[in-house]
Image (cartoon, rainbow, N blue to C red):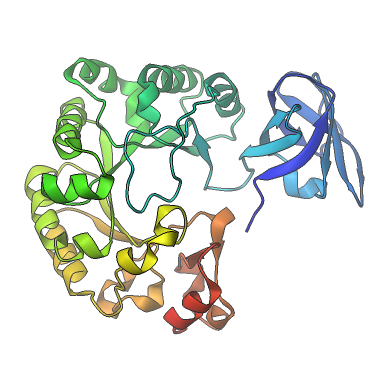
Length: 361
């Protein structure tokens, strides 16, 4: 697992964002920090904000990273890692749902970091795709959309993928979302069933399905780019074919429909036996849903499904979806010929379960 938060000490007193560089000819200034020392204990960088010491890392590991420095907490958060295609900014930990399998249980508090995250985006490497997540980002819809607009106004080479429950979009948002800048934005929208009863039960929020449909309608009229996401659990496994028909008929405009296996963390960790639907023994509903979606022009794909656990006919749909910083492979995967194309497991998935599931290809 790649560490994203490091111990560090800074001369500054307020949080700031900076890009780290090992190049000796980089002049310390706003947004830029130059390496000054490196030893067995860590590294030190100099910038307009003063000196920054980071413990237990080598300079090459951080070269080009855009980091958020919090002097009071004495940590350095790697917001945008150089050379990585898996960079996600968490804009809030608040959420208005309580999904039974939530991998990042929400908090009631909110720490406003929009200004700092905007600075980080402006320092991003060229042509980078930046993820935005929560909590629920659109609980702070004005701050979110304004940040995206400002960043893309200065950096039109960048693009965003924003995870949202889409329940806070209205007709009034359509002209804004239809603006050219938002063609650089894709929205990852969860939908767990084709009926309000089941969807609302999974997200633990009455009226969620109705609000979701209104939000999706606004995105549709705006011409927004949408990826639907469905986490597979025992409660919705048998209902996936019905959901496929709903998507094909009502939501055919989406760019993709991602069917996602459960993550062994957060709420799901303590409810694993009640939630986990073992697709190895019960792939038929998934196959029926995928076949129907593809037949009707919807691009279906599988996330968090190790390739060897998927029937051969559907293996090409199993994407390497798990971010590099939280991905692992059990030792049993070592001889597999398809590991480079496989998503593997989340770093926190129990090793014994992971080893039992796989069969190297």
